[in-house]
Amino acid sequence: PAAPPPPPAPAPDAAARSATAELERQVSKLERNLEMQTTMVDSKTRSLAAMEAQLEGAQQLASQVPSLQEALEASNKEIQRLQAALEGDETLLEVEVRKVARQQEEHLRDAARQAEAFDQERLALEQALEDKEEEVKEL
Image (cartoon, rainbow, N blue to C red; front, side):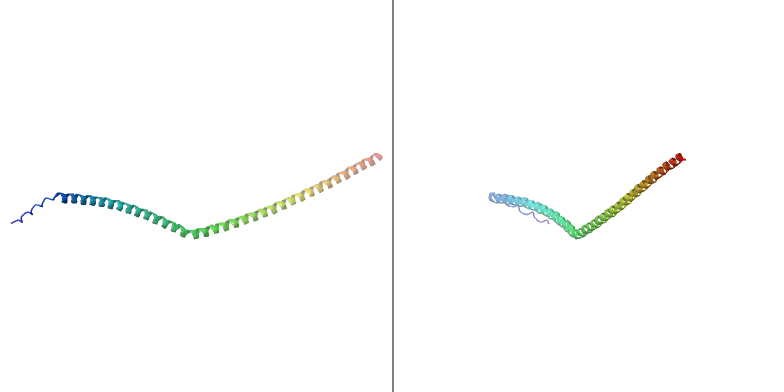
């Protein structure tokens, strides 16, 4: 045969009911506090993970600094080399300009000497022509 049903629980008295209600309120309060603490811990865990990611990124950037400094120094040296070459080119250009200017001045002096010589020759020829005309008149 089946086991007899358990005897009904004795009716709690008012003090026990009050104590039970107080315990239930405290349990509910503890559960809310636990939930708030869990939420805070989760939030702080996410913040910590974000900070760790930032730190890792910063460390990666920091590890690149030496190679970036080397690249910057190499670029600066190349810029200095190019500037020196440009200054050298300017100097060569200045030398070439002065050379061409001297050549032009020399050509102008030669042309002036030739013009003077032609002028002297013209005067001499005019004088010779006048002399010949005088001789012809005398004859």
